[in-house]
Image 1 (cartoon, rainbow, N blue to C red):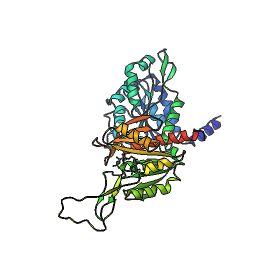
Image 2 (cartoon, helix red, strand yellow):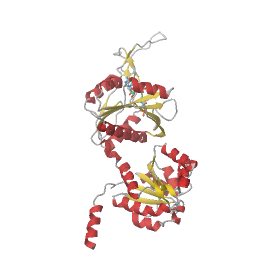
Image 3 (cartoon, rainbow, N blue to C red):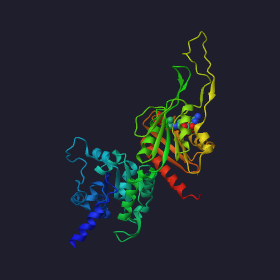
Image 4 (tube, rainbow, N blue to C red):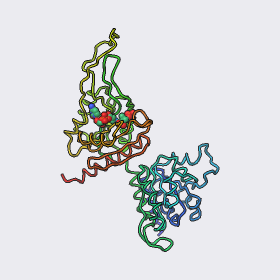
Length: 420
Ligand code: PMT
């Protein structure tokens, strides 16, 4: 008997899909807190490194010792406890997390997350982290249906970082019936695993990503350029590569990467590089700021100062790379464009989406300081050809890129299901 149970455990333990993933399991104070032990156990046995963080109220329902034993890591409770490390515990935990799962999430905890209140270790750690947060609400059905709770949930739902694992219908601990029962442990683990393994979704895809601003020479020393730093495009290429895509970055900015980087200067060079790979690619993501015009003629020598107060430069139109490729793209290819707008963001981006036959356009308002050109952050609106619209508030460009990878994998799934 003993022998067979040992065998069963070892074969289960040899399957570690969540190996190298760190999950912070937040537990707040509701009766469903006792299920945190099962969640912690399944996560750990799937290979994840699990750290439990309990709110003070959670300790009324479950002991830190149980979670320490099950996770094989010390459970964390005290915001101001002694730490062996110089870095505050909430920062240490925040930085280590690949994902934060809060199960159960009470009405009180959801309200704190929605408003940014951080008065204990768990809420402070969530605020200090940039990791994805998944929450499994659990509460009395009347509390769940209360407009305040519904509002707080809708606030979180609209934030890119949060995924809500809906509660289920059934009899809750107090004997009432309705929606409010925490989702089944298996449902929660499946959702967490799907999120953590999402990176594999671009594994068989080939992507071209463009980055930076083109430079259109006037003479050997001068050019017409723009303020694009390439950060958005490089973040996009990095994120897609990390999810297993075969990436070619066509960039005006030189970077060293494990994937091919084709360095170009002008719009025409960018066009040539993109077009030479376009047939073979599954998706093109044009974050580059391409000059619409270039000098008609490039002077062979540095243009000298003359007695005249004026210098007239004659310009000619550059090819619109994305527009040309939008016309010839196959049904199984996806094109994502960006729109840098200083006014009428929505209507201008929508027009570009339609005019250039794009699948998706990512609009950013470049009149807002600290986002867009050159900055580490961006805030965007994502519009699709089907008419959907999603706003992503200010966040690091890498987080925007991760979200665009989700958008891409969803579109690929859609294409695979579409009738030929
Ligand atoms: O590089 P960063 O400093 O990180 O800044 C990021 C960014 C602000 C440059 C980026 O987020 C962005 O908005 N990129 C698009 C800038 C732009 O040129 O927008 P547009 O509205 O002019 O062009 C619309 C689309 O057509 C873009 O996908 C562009 O790449 C493409 N285009 C434009 C002109 C042209 N001749 N050929 C093109 O393919």
